[in-house]
Length: 483
Ligand code: GLN
Image (cartoon, rainbow, N blue to C red; front, top):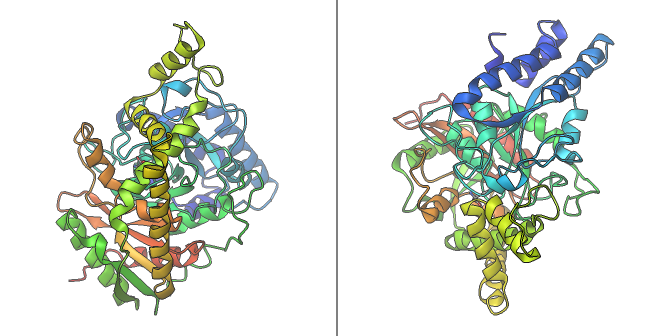
């Protein structure tokens, strides 16, 4: 199958219907290509051939019986290894869960398979989704298929690389502070962070529960919209999942964006933004203008507090969420036991990597008596102000356009010794995470060295339709050279 690496969902479904290939052959090819490329890119932690072949056979049997293909019928999908898959290891990129086998499926996984998807592997990621380069994985770094000596971004680096390298047509990642959008931007693919509550978190290993989201990576906006349509919607198993109508996202992609008002927040185009990234985003804005959008400058005045606020809230929540890995529950337990307390300490010291340990310590500190008001409560107040900035902005604009990250993909190893520098990769994505809005990264050209650049489009809560419509119209217009 020569063209496997570039197939879109529509092409897969046409191929299946016309008999050019079967779902079984496609699953086989997905596994063959991904395994062969994994030695170089390391984008998967493990594969699940039996589960994939079973799903593919179901699709082939339905096709043979003349039934309709589901929206993802036969489509090979890679899933980030923080998302539960029954009967399969779900490691979260951590030594502490190295041999943990999930005993249920996440709602998103269940919905994918019900729609005909063929899940064939679990992707590499930063440990417990903490990181911006995928270098915090206990299973090694991932290389960026667009520029192999560079990082793919993180924490969903494996899922982004799987789509960019042609190993999977679509994949699932998670975004807490930018972990779908930033790697999508670094690898040159589309990545969607849905509105908080749009997609059930049931079966997503919690990092920072008030910020975590599951969302898709794809090569086209349309494919991302299809996957989102499948996984979105109310789920009684997640009390934070919103009971809001899900729209037909694909149908909204009509290319008509005339008259939409786009806000450009002045705070995002300040110091620290790479000149080439700025230039590409400015060209992108010109393209949107030529499609009939009105571009207006706006202000999100509390932006400067976002990084500090995010790292107080996410570490506080992480310290509580990760308390459960204690050597009693789940799999790993240190062989040097001693007292109960020593066993806890040994297990956790052996099982967690440096970044996770740093965040547990910081989070425990900000939640401790005496510091709670000074740090955690203050961060919650700042979070409300940041969310109010967005609410106000969305009263006058339909969407907001910014860079995804201040710089393109950096070299492997370049930022590992400086956590603060690493934290700045997400400076443009964290704010909307705190506010709970939806956001997308859509490819917007390359630097002179050929490094992909993503443009971020943000929209108000549950307004994925406007965001996807804009991103799709933009994607159709790319290839442009607006001066
Ligand atoms: N890079 C950010 C962090 O390290 C975001 C991670 C994420 O979205 N999961 O927390």
